[in-house]
Image (tube, rainbow, N blue to C red):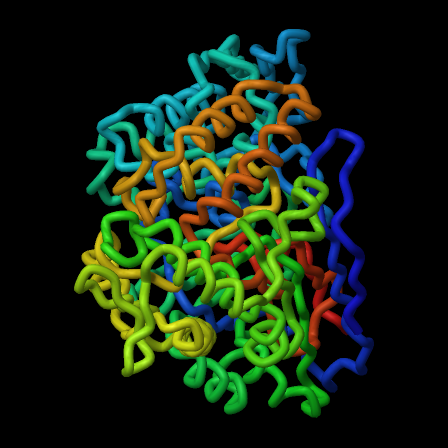
Length: 530
C-alpha cells in the first residue's frame, strides 16, 4: 500500500513532501529467508561519472559509500550524521559550527577528523577541481578546523540553505589528498565512512557494494548491494520479470504490467523532478520570445500527465512544483493553442500551405533530442512535437547518446530534466542564471534575463523567508512572459521491487534518482523480514 501526503513546510522553513510507501506483510521463506534476502540487485537507468564527492558525487546525500555532516530523513528533515547535532548558527547567519562524532573511521582504518571536512570543502572550492556544482557553495568564504572534532564554516553572505549543502559526502584527506583530484584513482576506488564499501565497478554494466562491518551506525542487514546499469526501460522491465533483478525504476506504463504480481510491490515517490524542453537562445526559431511564448500555451500538459505518465505526476509551469509553498500562484498556463496561434500571427510568423509557419524566409522548425532508450522522454518528445505542429511549428524528434546531445545544446532543443525538493535555489540558479550558460549541463538553453539574474542573486543572499519568497515569485512570473524552457510535467518516480524487507520507504526525490534515491535510499536500515 502507498500512502501520500502533500507538500508541507517544516518548522525550520524547509520545503518537504512526504510519501511513505508501506509494504504488506508476508510469510518468510522456509528455512533460510535471511540468507535469501541479505542481498539486493537494483536496475537503474544511469550511472555516475565519478564516485568522488570532490567532483560532485552524492552531493544531495544517500551516497552509500560516504556520509555527510548531516543527512535527510524520510521527510527531508536534516538530521545529524558525521556531526553530533545540527549546526550552531551565528545571529548574523554567517558562522556555522559543527561538532563531529568521535571514533569514526574510514574504511581503510584512518580516523575521521575535522581535517577531512576542511580538505573536502577546500578542494571543491578550488577552481582547478572539475566539480560542476561549485556554484552551490558560492557563499562559502572559509572553512577551518577548530580542533579535531569541531569545524567552523564562514559565509560571505547569509545563505539560507547552507545547512542543506552539508549533506555533501566527506572524502578522506589521507586517501585522496596526494592524487590528481580530477583523474586520480579515488574517482573509481573511493574510501569513505559510509555503510557500504565499493567492491567493483564495471562502467556501463554494474556497481557492487558490500556492507561495512565497522560502520559507526551499525552493520547493515542487507550485506550485498548491486546496481545494474540498464539504460533501456524495456530491458529493465524484462530483467525484473525474469527474476534477474530484485528492484527497478520503471516508467509508469511498464510498471503497470507488474500490478498483478503478488511477489512484487510498486512504490511511487513524489518528486521535484521535471521534464522540460530547452529552447536555445541562439537558434533562430527557439531564440524568438514569441515562439517560446506560443509553445508554452500550445503544450497540453494535463494530457501528458494522463497519457504519458498514466496519472503519476502533475502539470509543470516551471521547475517548482505546484504543490510546493514556493510556487507562485497564478502562474499556471492553460492549454490554449488558439492564443498561441495569435501570438505567432502578430509576430509575423505566417502559416504556409504545408502547415508550417515562416518569417523572412525562416521556417518555424527545429530539432528536439532525447536520450536513446528513455521511453518516457521519447513519449514526451513525440507529444510535444504533435502539440507544436498544431500551431504550425515543425519539430523533428531525434534520439542519441548524451555525448551526442551535449554537442548540440547550443543549436537544438533537448528533452531535459532537473529538480530538487530541498530549496528553490538548487533548482533555479543553475537552470536560469545567465553567467552559467554553457557551463556543462547548467543553463542549457543559454537563458539570459537580467531581471531573473537580479532576483536569483537577491534570493540567494538573504536569509529572510519573505524576501526569498517574493524574489522567487518574481522569477516565476518573469518566466511566463519570457520562457526559456517549455516545462511539461513533474514526475512521480515509480519503482517495482520484491516485498522481502521491512523499513522500506521513499523520500521526496530530486531529478537524480536510481543509485542514491529510490526506496533503497535507507537500505542500510532495512530489516530482513522473517
